[in-house]
Length: 245
Image 1 (cartoon, helix red, strand yellow):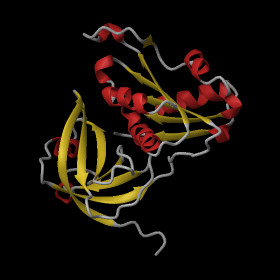
Image 2 (cartoon, helix red, strand yellow):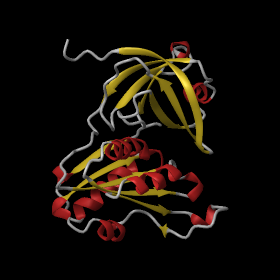
Image 3 (cartoon, one colour):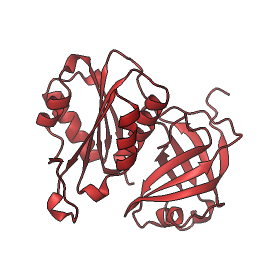
C-alpha cells in the first residue's frame, strides 16, 4: 500500500527543558528503520486521554534530523493542556504511540538558491531539523535563519545554533527580540519584529531566494503579506502554520 503510514511504539530516552515553557523529548529508534525528511511531522497518541480531551491525537514537527539515526525528537510548547501535561511528566522508559511521517515542509536542495528561514517562537522546530540535516550532510546550501522571540531567554536552541554556525560556513542565524524591556537578560542584538528592513539586509537577491516561514498563523500570514509586498514570487514562499499548539 503506497499510502500506508506505519505506527510505532517508541520509548522515551531523554527529556530536556529548552526554555521555561518549551521541552524536547527524545524517542529511541535504534534498530528501527524509520524514514522521514527534515521538516516533516508525526502524530502522537495517548489512548488514556480519549475521554479527557476532544482528541487524544496531536501533531508535532520532528525537530531532529534524519541524520540523527538513534532517536527522533519533538520539541513542544507547554501550554497546560492535559495532553501537554502528559508530555511534560514523561519519564525515561515511558512509551509513546506515534505515526509518521507526514507533511511537505521539506528542504529544497536547489544549491543555487539562497534559503531564508523566518521563524517565530516554537515555529523554530522544523528549521532545527533542516539546519542540522544540511550541516551533517555538508550540503552547499546558503541558509539564513531569521528568528524572532519576545525575550532572549525564550530563544530555543540558541547554543546549538551557535555551534552549528561554527561547523557550517554556509549558515547564518540572526535573532531579533521584540520585548527586551521585559527580560532580565541584557540584549545587544537586533530588536523588533521581522520586517522589510531586516529581510532586505539578509536577502539581497530576491529572484534567487526561497523563503520558508513557520510559526503561529497570524505571524505566518503577516510574513506572507510582507514578502508579497516586497515582490517575492508566491512559488518561492513555503509555509507551515502551527495551530493550537
